[in-house]
Length: 90
Figure 1 (spheres, rainbow, N blue to C red):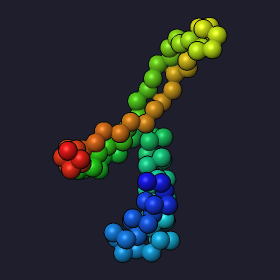
Figure 2: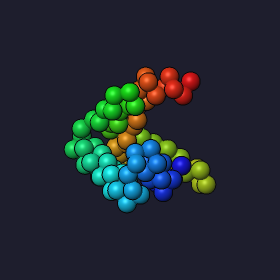
Figure 3: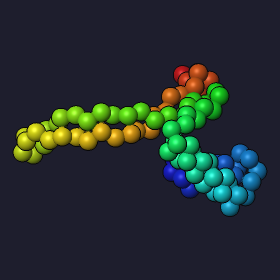
Figure 4: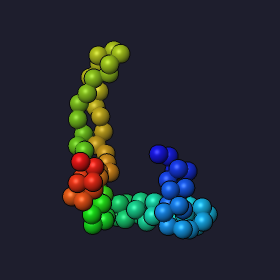
């Protein structure tokens, strides 16, 4: 499902117009990005939680030349599904 399909699904399930559904989704994405940038964790009970994990700098190899390279440290977004979501999927 891409963003347009998600907006359509939100509009159908909520009774909102597509324009309002797009605004709601964009607002959710913006609020999520803002909270994660500040280092906050977002918990949606029954659905899951978004958080930040940090990868340390590590050594790797260039697959073409075999030369050793340094892969820089970076922050990554992680998602952990909630118990209710896992039950519905299984």
